[in-house]
Amino acid sequence: MTQDGLGMHVVFTGAPGCGKGTQARLLKERVAIPHLSTGEMLRAEAATGSALGSEIKALIDGGNLVPDDMIIKMLSKRIDADDCKKGFILDGFPRTLPQAEVLEEMLSKKGITLNAVIEIQVPDEIIMERILGRYACMTCGQGYHDKYQKPKVYGVCDNCGGTDFYRRIDDNRSTVQNRLVNYRALTYPTIPYFESKGLLRTVDGTGSIAAVAKKIDDILAVG
Ligand code: AMP
Image 1 (cartoon, rainbow, N blue to C red):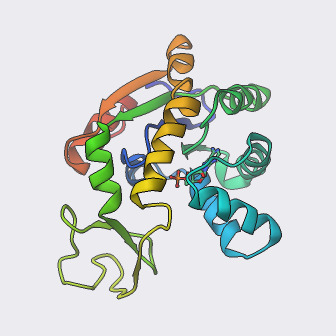
Image 2: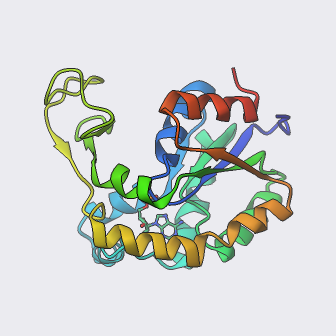
């Protein structure tokens, strides 16, 4: 994949639980550009307990999207930071058509073009099982799964040795169902939009984490 001299700018998209966060984190290790997860930014704001944070928390916990203007403001500030000068990996943004249009406008003002929008496709039945079983290390954020990715030593994080783990509050069956409904209604329309721009690359996300990462490397010509 050619770059424009301003670095690599990639979007990861797909339904909740498709593995976009996992793949974005792995790609970040390989290409040394920041991984910008709007979900993580929002969870950090929610954790402050501010009035804005409480508003955000209620939306996330119900499986609903936060308003476009709020997230756009947050993201545009973040991509202006110095560490984004060589590019970034967007995970969870854009999630609506207006967000996609604003992103394009923001980047074109900076003379940046997106390299690719990578859609990771996973069927709904698999998504539910993946999300309901997933948890992460409280210290380093390393992800695990009750069935598919257990720590080597029970109760101890492979990555940092941490012994405290957490599950996201929005990773429960009814909230995931609502997140899937919102994905189809609000986020899915961005797929044909990016396809019409010649940016869409679709990856089958049902293989192993390493197999999916390999497909992404091939698309981005990383390696
Ligand atoms: P994620 O970590 O990507 O699964 O996002 C968790 C939650 O954060 C979502 O279910 C939304 O409530 C919210 N969120 C994350 N990114 C966005 C976005 N770009 N627009 C609106 N809401 C978002």
